Length: 111
Length: 112
Image (cartoon, rainbow over all chains, first blue to last red; front, side, top):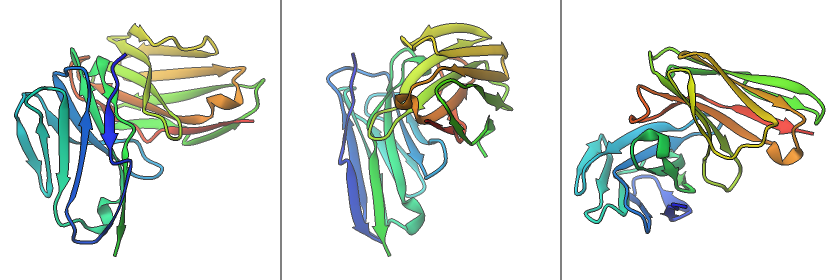
């Protein structure tokens, strides 16, 4: 089946640093989504990407849909303590029903 | 608040118990989903309902039984679970099957 390789698995950074994480796959996806999950909560959608090459921002977050349709990255600029959590990528084929999730990147920020 | 409410938030049950998880969405969506989230594993899709009809059963054991009485409510009935079924069970909804998901806060289930 389809699999997503999300890296890094964990990150320990200083407040104010920029963060970059990515997802890669051997399969082509039509949709890339990025979610953030905080302890005791469900994932919350951050950014949705629908076209190859698309670059979309949401505040300090920027995500891109890779040209090959097999990868996506998420950048967070000038990290702050509330950015702590687990970030998941998800690739979609034929819509949400076929979402495949990455294993997540756990972000820890030292103040 | 995502508009998707799950109850209970936490549940501890024995292997012989019968319990149910409840999900309600206030977003006017037509598709609802159950996902299982275990430690150090990706989210696993369990069931999909679209306009109250089940459209996906991802090889889930019969000890998990979903029910979708209407487009706003989704249940997961649990019976004779195993300790390895302990996980966070997440409900999600989307406007249609082809749109982005909105998740509830989940039910943290422990099977003793």
